[in-house]
Image (cartoon, rainbow, N blue to C red; front, top):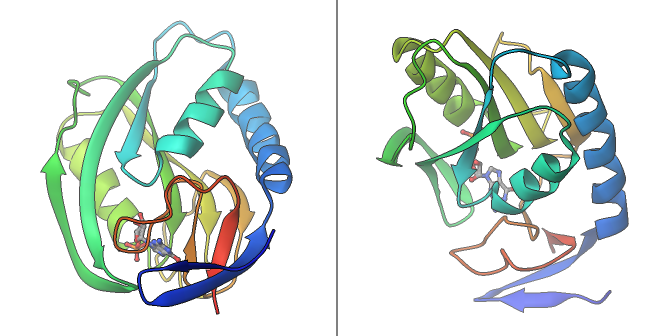
Length: 179
Ligand code: 5GP
């Protein structure tokens, strides 16, 4: 793996795909042990666009009946969080009375995920759990515990495996960090 350039910035290799896969295996096992044998059909709520690769990898590993739904939120512009969370699409199914597992790419301040959790609770979801591929524990400042975290990362701007820098880099199989 070598460094890459997206727009005006350089990124160096940070987390290889093999490590992501192992972390997703582990988090999927935790979810399976909580939901396997359930009689309802939980909703896996994929936060577009960033969580698309993670959600696909996670779903393949789940051994209970689940429904996929998508939602699009936005709080980031370039490499900075704006602090305001906007819903630009979805959710693509009715969550009333359903157990929902939010499938997020990365939790930074937590503004996005907590706003989404509150929104789904408002819409009548029976339970809303949070699953994130990556967490920046140094930045996360909310009291709400995150149910499932695949991997922790330091406070740096990263791209790849669904994560973008101004819409570039989502297709990278490995994760890169800003140089
Ligand atoms: P939060 O609301 O937790 O501050 O930010 C969450 C959202 O910001 C994520 O869903 C993701 O879209 C974006 N984000 C946060 N940190 C990063 C990062 O390091 N790289 C990229 N590409 N996006 C990030």
